[in-house]
Every structure is written in structure tokens, then in C-alpha cells.
Length: 316
Picture (cartoon, rainbow, N blue to C red):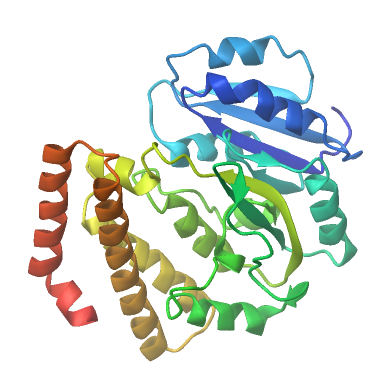
């Protein structure tokens, strides 16, 4: 692989042996003809996933391991340190992508030297696409500097808004943006670490392009815990909401937005994430995904934190 790598695909995984081979097959069979690498990051798995990987002798695959389970943020950070491609593509091991996603995104990216290119994704539940004919935008779009700022201002004011520019999957990000600005995931976060990273990246993006195609699939597992539930069960600290708010406000500051608007948007984001967390966790409880006694205590603590925190009252 002495030729310049065009894309680095970073895939963190933990106890994912049932998904590993399918994930690798989809990536190795891409119709992308340019040089690219697949960086697999084992987050201290205890199953047979790494052995399955080692049987794949394709030179495009690299395997790295964390010494202890540290979460997707830490795993992706290791991947970023090892990546050599012009663009970064993050992929989750239990999701899947179309065989042309890399070629479609890359060709668009190099057409006008975009910093970021992204597409839409399917939500698959019970073998059905819950987002059939639902897209983030009505047509292919180009975002210049001012349009990116406008998207930032609207992010937390429409509860029905699809993530679009702030989504994490199905996108190519110019690696130089990440490396030159020393952007890494907050490893302390086990929830919202991906959107926090996206905001940090958008601090420096000057141009972006959207392709109105669903080229990747997110699989909804009805009986599996959400990232939020897992995060709260692992002791997600209420102060992390303030950490995320701080990232967003720093991003807006870099964009030159007025201090008054920065405060308003930061407050709105703070409340938005707290309410979303409370609703999502309560829903998981109602669906019987969580241990009843333990989840009651965790939710009670979250509610008490909300009620007693002065910054919540001030933001409201």
C-alpha cells in the first residue's frame, strides 16, 4: 500500500463476532477502485471476533486493540491516529453500507475538493426500512460557510429534524481537518460522543455536499439497549451535558457567531439533550429493555440532577 491512500475506514468493535465477517465482506467488496484501508479497532473484546479477523489476509485490513474496554470514542481515536487516508469514513460493525458508498462519496468529494460529503441512511427494523422515501433534504445540496452556520442555528429548534449535516455515519471527512485542528472524541462520553465530535469538525468545515441517496443502513435492534441506556447504566455523569454544551458553544465561537446567540443556542442544546435523554431512557424502561429496580434508581437520580441544577433553571 505504498500508493497514496484515498480513504481510511475506521471500525470500532466490541464482542461483535456475529457481525465481523459480514462487515468485512461489505467493505472488501466495495466497487471503489482507489487505494483505501480498513482499520479495525478491538475495544478489549472477550469473544472470538479478533480471531475471525486474523483469518482475513487482505492487506487492506489492519487490526489494533485497546488494553481495556474504553468505549467507541477511545477506539475511534486510536483509529484516527493510525489512519493515513485523505478522507476518513467511520463505520459501525453492526450496520451495513451499499457496495458503492465509498466511490459515490469520494467522487463527489474530489469534484470540488469538499471538506465533508454525506448521504442518507435507512433505519431497518423487522426487515423494513422505517425511513423509506424519507430524506434529510429534498435534493442534493451544497453547503457553503454561511449555510453551515445557518444549519447550526436550527439544529435544536425542530424536534422532527433529521440529523443531516450533524449525522455521524455515511460521510467522508477530510482527514487534514481532523488532524490539523487536533480534533478527537471525548473518551469520557459513552453517549453523544459522536455528535459532539461532529460539532467539533463542523467548527472548521468550509464546504460540504449532501447526496440524496440512502447508501447505508442502521439496524434497530428492538431488544438491545440504546447507547444512552448503556451510557447511563455505566454512570454517565450529569456534568457531561455541560461538557457537550461547551463543545457546541466553542464551535459557534469559532464560527464568529455573536455571544448572545452562542448563549441562546447553547442553552437550547443543553435542555434539548437532557429532555431527549429522559424520554429515551423512560422509553427503554417501558419496553422492558432495562432492569426495573436499577433503572428506576438511575432515572430518579437523573431527575434529581435536573431539578437541583442551577444551570438547567437558567437555561430554561
